[in-house]
Length: 318
Image (cartoon, rainbow, N blue to C red; front, side, top):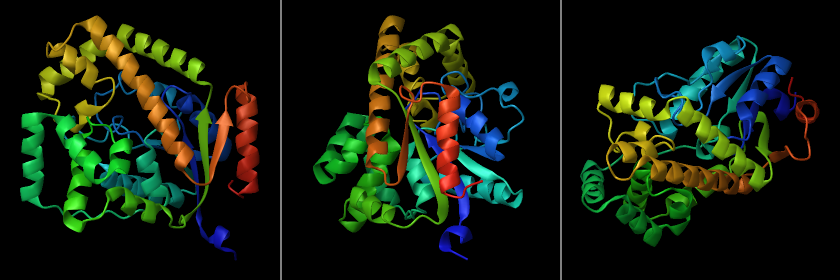
């Protein structure tokens, strides 16, 4: 038996926000007998529906979805917890004789799962509290500047508003004297324990940005502002809560906090989402063994499905 045959099969379907991952994942799951595991840092939260573009249960077509609506709004969530929850879900999927399909746009989560990256969970409470206090007093940009000085590669990959990841990278440097980005590069050189196909959906930037703007307009019409207001009022959420650091939530929260008016919030949200999509594509271009699916070339759903099934057959994933 070959090493490939000994490994469990795994399908990854990812790409930038608003590129069309969800609809294609349903077709793929039906084609291969798959179950979907969400790799999204906000869809894990209950009640975070509109801003996360969470698929409603009635649209799941009976396909099991995992890592959706599993956390309360005040809970924290990070890559270590994602990996743990995802591996637990995948164990059950394999027991049922199905194939896990990892769907979502959080590249760091996908990388950690795919290459079984290990993370040191030990932290120094004193140093962490010092960083938290500094962030409270001088803002997230101050922490991000500190990270840029000691580990510019990590600073380029982590948004300043993602305080949790910025602090984790600073902690790692403080504890080891080494860059967190170097640790990640070493870890990601590991061979994957899975027989996998890693698909990344893409399309030309102008069309993607137009879709992003349309989606945001639809979210607003569907009640995004009311959703954020209700979450804040019900669960007393602030910018410090992990759930409120997601795009679509932090921008509207700024409006609700009186930092700017609604038109400005919408402008910032559209800008931040475009920038986020650009960062996602940059991340995926750095990854190994990626199969790019260009929606402008494969300009029909059937062409996309056929391309995917051809690649899966080549990798003996069925």
